[in-house]
Amino acid sequence: MVNIPVDTEIPLATDGPAVLACGAWLKNTVCLTQGDRAYIAPLIGDLATADACNRLDQTVRRMLQQYPDKPRIVAHDLHPDFYSTRLAQRIADEYRIPGLAVQHHHAHIAAVCAEHGVIQPMLGLALDGIGLGTDRMPWGGELLWVDGTRFERLSHLAALALPGSDRAAREPWRMAAAALFRLNRRDEITDRYADQPAAATVAAMLDSGLNCPYTSSMGRLFDAAAGLLRINLVQVHEAQAAIQLQQLAEQHGTVAPLTGGYQFTGTGELDFAPLLAALIDCHDSGRDTAYAAALFHATLADGLATWLEYTAQQQQLSLLAFGGGCFHNTLLRRGLLDRLSPSGLQLLFPQRLPPDDSAIALGQAWIARQYHPEEPGACGQCQHQ
Image (tube, rainbow, N blue to C red; front, side, top):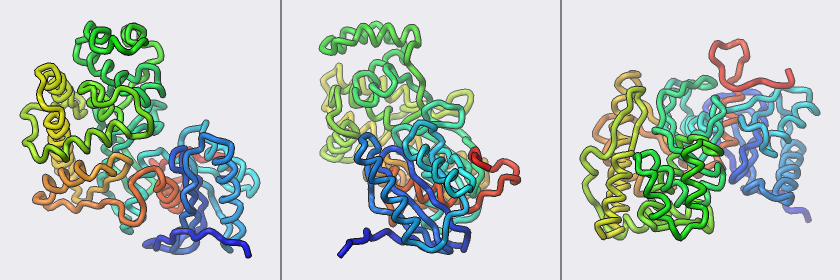
């Protein structure tokens, strides 16, 4: 007897055409909509191995055979090099249907919209590691206006360099070096990280800008904090540094946010540079690392809440959705809820699915179901017309 995998069924607010969505790179899942239901396949995982890519192929084929309504459009991430993107394009060619590229953070917020049945304009805060932005730069700390297929990047976290690009995501000391560079303390990099053989090279890379793309990622801001406090210099697994920061903060308990710990740039970006400088002072003075971790979390929540309240008032919107892997951090979620609950804003968090990239396929499908190429400002890049 063949065991057919059990797909997660999500009720949708409206009926619509069948849509296949192939997800992203990390924590990959597949979504296929049928009428007013979305079916999410069991987690495939990161598409870093041939085995994972084969499982994605098999999952897509199984779902296309199992469900009666064939897709009218196939959605995928904006990143052209993801295996999930290339598979989606092959399916689009095979079925002779359009393929729709959906920006990563738009999909995060759309997944929350799908779960809650939201079909009106709203604000979305997407905080994660990295996703390709419409400007081809790595995003990850995004405040978006979202209305179905349309979105606008209203603002974002102030950017930090990624010395070594993807390698910086695995080595928090590199993000700490980027923070020092940002604070005009470049000359401290080699002394503070003398135990890292590449310290001088990273300092030179930051000087020249070579292989140092800039990112607005909240995940990399957590890494910078962990590196500055020397909690974690090289990660063994994904989000290890952020998890260690959260655990230390929880051990310490509640603290007040740092006064002046964030600022807004002339273009409205939220900049936590003063907080990073305070973490360096905590480390250098021998202050309890757990206190510094708690201060980091409290100040993040305060800065983000202030940003959201101001933007909601400016945009005259009362709905806020939260998506992205950083919302696995229960301390950050609780801090935002505590700060924003008295504001009267309606706060929407993921319920049935995790906040991370395993919800991306649902968000892609939610957007693709509503996609009309002739609509002004519609998202994505429709291929295979």
